[in-house]
Each structure stands twice: as structure tokens, then as C-alpha cells.
Amino acid sequence: MVKDCNIVWGNCLQTIRENVNPQSYKTWFEPIKPVGLDGQALTIQVPNKFFYEWLEEHYVGLLKKSVRNQLGDDGRLEYQILLRTDESQYKPANGRRESRNGNGSDQSEIKNPFVIPGIKKLKVDPQLNPKYTFEAYIEGDCNRLARSAGVAVARKPGGTAFNPLVIYGEVGLGKTHLAQAIGNQIISEQENKSVLYVSSEKFTNQIIQAIKNNAINDFVNFYQMVDVLIVDDIQFLANKVKTQEIFFHIFNQLHQSGRQLILTSDRPPKDLDGMQERLISRFKWGLTADLQAPDLETRMAILESKMVDEGLDVPSNVLEFISYNVQNNIRELEGVLISIIAQASLNRREIDIDLAREVIQKFVSQISKQVTVETIKELVAEYFDMPVEKLQSKTRKRSIVIARQLSMFLAKKLTNQSLKAIGAKFGGRDHSTVIYSCNAVQDLMDTDAIFKDTVQELEKKLSLSLATG
Image 1 (cartoon, rainbow, N blue to C red):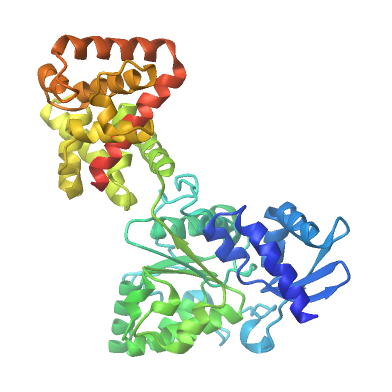
Image 2 (tube, rainbow, N blue to C red):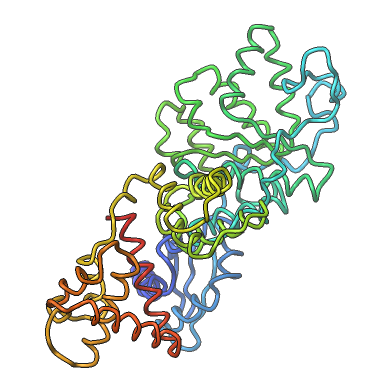
């Protein structure tokens, strides 16, 4: 029986793998375990209720198709939701204490480490940047899972399976933005919720001051009052034994009270060296979602959004050029755009590809590579699936003539070579042939939208070769 359900589910996974991207497959299907097969009903085990709801909302059609492929038209799927055995350890408490510091004191009596000594402040300052919102956080394949989880948490903090929500990724991919967007959304929609954002560095410094002032209990009591705690760059708590010990107790109290924890890191919990195992274990209780480098379309959307927000006016071809050449860091991507605007304003220069290239050279060393006629010939030949030598031949076959003319057109547009030099690289043709070819390509672009798209696609590929060369 076990063998049969494993085989059936394994075959289902083959169909599923062909229809979803690798990240979605890893997140939503690898954790599933087949547990039974009764006639035409396949039973699978999922980690929690939210997992089940997500599958039903986003993948029910695909699941139905894959099961029926294996069990026939009457084949059906049944779910078994995994329950944790240690309810006292994992399940948040349902009740809420009227006095959240545990001793009957009013919130105003607990010292707030975010307040200047001597100045009373009854309400927790969330320490959030109001610019960090979901609206300003462009969604793409690179961040869809993390963003979707963030939206779910914002709607129901402490009430989803995503507690804690751990967001990790390389520098500059938007971890802080997403974490703070969750906090800002909660504040705007649920005024009764207290939200607090703190960097791990500030958290550590506060602990040091609390120890000096013999005020650790006040410090811990303050943090245990918060409904939503966001801790940025949790990896910097590594090897800080006392800080980890205090954070462990705060984490436990908040989690058991049904409060929401959101953590960011530059690596997944399992790779956090210098962190206590009991903390790493708790970080894994909820959802760990990674942020990847944005794809081209997402980078373009980010730049366009930034341009609108800042009231900037940048030609679309310059935005495209930036997107091709700055690929792995959103902060750097936006920095390049602002630097180009500043350079154009200060030096009274037109915003064009040349200016963009000069600015990007300071950010991305690979951009220094220049497009050559040989690069163009190789790319065009590859695109039209023909040997490079054909572009230099005397043949008048139409497909080869168009490829040759297009190569000349791109060489004239994208290199500093003279017409004579370009012609010489295409079988010793003269400058008049290059001029004729360029005019022929331009005429074809003006009358044939498909051909125009082909030319633009090749220009993009050449621009990308600058960054990856």
C-alpha cells in the first residue's frame, strides 16, 4: 500500500514539475508526503492548514489533472494535515492577558528603550520608514512567495502559519523594504496593534545599556508588549551569547502569546553559524522565504516605479540599458538611476546611453567591455542559425542578405567603426554597400513590426553581453 501511494504520487510530481517553476515546486510540493491509497483516493500529508489552503487556492487544477492522469477520471486527492505533538511548545496561546507585562502594571510604567531618558512616551514608536509599502514593492518571480506571505501576515498578524516569517537574501534585494511594508500595512489597517522594527545592532546596543543600568527586566517587559516584532539582519546576533539568551526568552513569550515575529537575514536559518541551536529551531517553526535577484522585467518595473515616485523623466532605452547592466542589487539599480539624473543636471548633459554607460562603469566593472563588429556578427549568426562565414560570403540568398544587412546596421549604430571599416569586415564590401544596407534595414523596420521587434531584441542581447562579457 505504501509503495503504491509513493509510486502514484511520484508520477504526479513528474507532471507537476513540468508545470511550475523550480522555486514553487521546492516550496509547495517537495514537503508533501504520500500516506495512503484507497481505491481511487490518494491521501497526501501537508505540513499545516495554511499549506493546504494555498494548494487549494493556487494549484487545485494542476493537482486534479495529475491525480486523474494516474487514477482515472474518478481519481481524487485527500489531505492529511500534520499536527505538532507538543502543543504547549508550538501552539500559540489563545488567551490574551489584560496586563501584558505579567505583573498588573500599566504599559506606561514599563521603560521604553526607544525613548530618550526623562521623556515619557506611552505609545510604541514603530521605527518604520513610511516609504516602505507593498505598493512600492514591485512583485516578480524573484520575490512572489515572500511578498505573498508578507501580505498574508499583514492581514492577520500572528494568525497564520507564517510565524515567524523569515525573509532572507543577498544584500540589496529588498528584505528591509518587505519587512517594513508588512509593519506599515498592519499599522494602517489595525490601529490597535503595536508594531516595532529594530535592527539586530540596535537591539544588541539596547541590551548593553540595559545591563549597565541594571534594567534587563524592564527591557524584556517592553519587548514582550509588542504585537508585531520585526528584527532586521538577525545574522548579526551570531556569537553574542547574552543577546541570544535574552532574544530567546522574548521570542518564546511573543510566539506563545500569538504575537507575530518577522526576521530578516542574509542566509537561511540552517546556515546561521554562531547561533544557538534552540534559536535556529524556532526560526524554522514558520516560513522561510528567500529573495532572489530580480529578472529583467522586474528590474524595468522597479526603475519605472522609481522614476514616477521621484518625478523623473528618463528615456525608455536608457532604463532598458540600466536594467540589462545592473542585475543583482536593487539598491544599486536605483542608485544608478539617481546618479544619471544628477550627472545630467550638474553637467547639463542629455540623458542617453553614453551617459548611462559612464555612470554604470563606476558601479559595474564588466560594463567596460565594448561591442565590436565581431560580437555583432556572432550574435546575428547565432540568432539566424547560420555560420558566421555566411555573412561575409557573396551569396544573394535572401535570408543571408537580410542577416548581413542587419549586422551592418547594428555595427554602424553600436560601434565607432567607420563605414569603410565595417564593409571590410563583411567580405571587403565598400562604404556605399553599408549605407544601402542600413537604409534597407530602416525601411524594413518602418514597414514590418515583426522585423522591428527582431532588431530590438538583438540590440537588447548585445547590451546584455556588455554586462556578462
